[in-house]
Amino acid sequence: MKAILKDLGLSDVNPGAGTGTTWLKCGGEILESVSPIDGQIIGRVRQASVADYDKVATKASAAFKEWRMVPAPERGHIIRQIGNAVRARKQELGTLVSLEVGKIAAEAEGEVQEMIDICDFAVGQSRMLYGLAMHSERPRHRMYEQYHPLGPIGVITAFNFPVAVWSWNAMVALVAGDTVVWKPSSKAALTALALSKIISRVLQENALPEGIMNVVIGSRNEVGERLIADKRLPLISATGSVAMGRHVGQVVASRLGKSLLELGGNNAVIVSSQADLDLAVRAILFGAVGTAGQRCTTIRRVIAHKEIFNPLSEALIQAYKQVVIGNPLEDGVLMGPLIDGQAVQDMQKALKELESQGGRILYGGEILSGSIYDAGTYVTPCICEARNDYPIVQEETFAPILYLIPYDTLEEAIQYQNNVPQGLSSAIFTRDLHESEIFLSHMGSDCGIANVNIGTSGAEIGGAFGGEKDTGGGRESGSDAWKTYMRRQTCTINWSREMPLAQGIEFGID
Ligand code: NAD
Image (cartoon, rainbow, N blue to C red):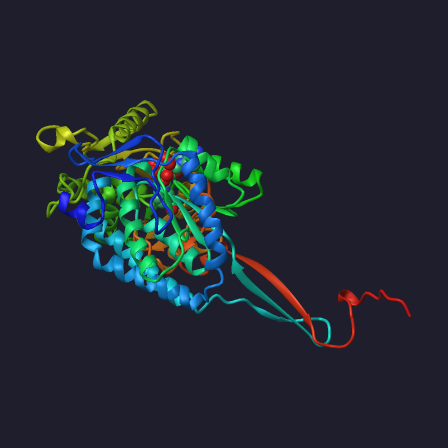
């Protein structure tokens, strides 16, 4: 572990605020990064105070004035180098993600790969920051829309994707000409610092000024509140729980800033009587148990046709029994620990509520003990029988609990699928074209992501990622999500020698 930390440029106690090229002597309290694998302290961070945050935001504002003037393809050239630097450290970064948040190695490295992919995407995007040209109603006039860099951007991230989610924002913001102030989750502080150090080397090698890519680790109540209220940051992109997003959205709206919210999900898979059950079981296993049920896109509900309800639940229970739970860095392990003791308690509380509301545990849900389990936060993934309208089923419990819900007609299944406050990801398993098209139509899934014959998680970076309703409505990563990080300007140029007005208005003096 020590060798990996050293290789990533981390020491025993690390400053929690940096401006891309310079690290601040921070004035906040010490934060211990504790591994959920075995309860050991991985490293420490001297957190930023509000005063430290202010220094960083000042640098980010100053650097914006320079960075925005660097041509976009040149910005892309810097991002290409960042992508290559991360590529060279993929395994070490993956190991740190496993140590800090408990993901199995394959998923942790997969997350680093997402950052590499978004770097490639952003490099291409650097030559495609297109605006539209349109025909003016006035003779000899030209109209077009262009996109300009927006400013220093605040990025708040959740613990569960400490590399990918930030990079989806940061790399796209960078190519758009923005500078970034990142407030990562305190539960994944070392990963954030390791990434910042990798980027720092690239910025220094290119003799870029400080303030382009900033990181601030500090308490949500002080540093977090200061960041979201900071008028210098025209956009706050926040990923996390619905409760956090509701608050951040209100604070940012009250200063008429822009927010991009990526919040909790309550994702369902409909399994029709026409489904390939084997395919469905494999997808549900990964979607519900992967990352120990701690993905925003985790499958939380399976809405199964009554005809296949029993064979499907039997097959899922058999599959769950084979899941090896343990140290996420060991080969063959499919599920690591939950992030902390609070997450274990939340899971137990949800299961009690489920039973009191009429639901039934079919498999799992125990806290594991003995050997490594005693020092960590390990549970068995859980399958329950439930109804969609139970209050607990309406909530996102960030743990591996899967609710199985029977249905009769597709109309009823879609109604269940949509009838939750969140709207992130959804899927149907069917071989019937009519069913899949209904699911994808205006009368189908109301989520930001709708899949056929694949699960709800594991999105690719090429498509814009995000969800509707309580999930917050934001879109980040691919497609045209870059537009959020820029300001749009409509320009009209009169190249005639006349002054015609729009809508045929005559307004002049003879
Ligand atoms: P969380 O809401 O507890 O924290 C997320 C981030 O918000 C952290 O960095 C935290 O410090 C910060 N924060 C909280 N209150 C703040 C405040 N007042 N001011 C500024 N910052 C504040 O979430 P978590 O436990 O880290 O992550 C799990 C949640 O994130 C789940 O609900 C999950 O679904 C969601 N999530 C959503 C997506 C998505 O893209 N939709 C992706 C990953 C995670």
